[in-house]
Structure formats: structure tokens, C-alpha cells
Image (tube, rainbow, N blue to C red):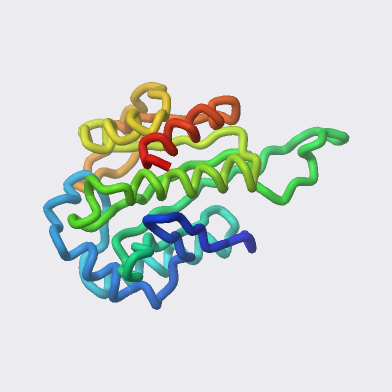
Length: 207
């Protein structure tokens, strides 16, 4: 079980462990403009949102994910969600310095969505800064990857903008929102790249 599930706080947003208490906020955030989510599986309505939260929490309890509500610090409004998931714990050899670590070695950031009001604001950039800082500085992960529907040009541009490296297209990789086997564009950041990526993110945020 992944017991390390902190609140990650920034100037613009706060990432809180996803919980049923966030349901009303997520329902309102997702309903603001459902048309935004052509390529993303964003829950609509109470039943879907509660199932979304329960599934995310079960992954957290299994130790394979950390799921968060994205909360605007200025007024406490829930504006979306994100998570670290597919957390990998590598089988290091006996005697290796990383052998008995409780933290994951690699993983993915995704399931990220924002309400319309938060699109094209600092919210996504700061959320990525908070998650990546936790991944590389607290967990000391070696790699973080991202996948998005290859057709989702907005998401692909956002990943390139934060400094993630494009690795290629995974064909027929995951179920798409239009119920086909989608091609996924894959991006990543590795440990050695993190210092430069962090500086870049801070510059984008003007910090």
C-alpha cells in the first residue's frame, strides 16, 4: 500500500489526495464544458465521478498510484484532477543502494484534466511542477512518462511545452474515448533531465 500520499502545495494550486469530499467539486468542474474532453476520459455526473474516485482510491491502496484533486489556492475551488500511476518498483540486485527503497523507481503522470476556467492558466504547469518535484526529489524516481491520444494536439503541445521528450507513437495502445484502440503519443522525462526541466517550469510560471 502506498502510504506516502501528501498534500502538494503551490502558489496557484494545491494537490489534495482524491477523496469523496471532492465529488461535488469534480462534478461541477467537469460539467462546465464537457466538449473539452473529446480525447480524455473525464467523468460526467455523480455516479461516474464517485466511481472515478473509488477506482483511483483502490489504485492508491494497492500502491500503484497517487490520485489528486487539483484545488485552486485562492478560493479552494476544485478545478480538476491528476494522478501518478503505473508506479514501478524495480527488482534491484542484492547489495544495490536502491534495493530496499520503499519508493517507486518509475511511473506515469496522467488522468489530468481541468475545468474550462482553468485552461490556459498556470494551473496545469504548476500541477506538473508539483508532481514532478515529488517524483524526482522525494521519491528519487529515474523516469516519468506521459501518454496522450495521438490525435490530441492540445495535450501534445502542452507536454512539449513543459520540456518532456517525445519518444514515439505506441500503436493500438489504449482504449480511446471514442471506443477504438487509440494510438498514444509517448513523452518522458528522466532523472538527469529534471534539473533543467524544473528551471524551465519555474521560468514558465515566472517564479
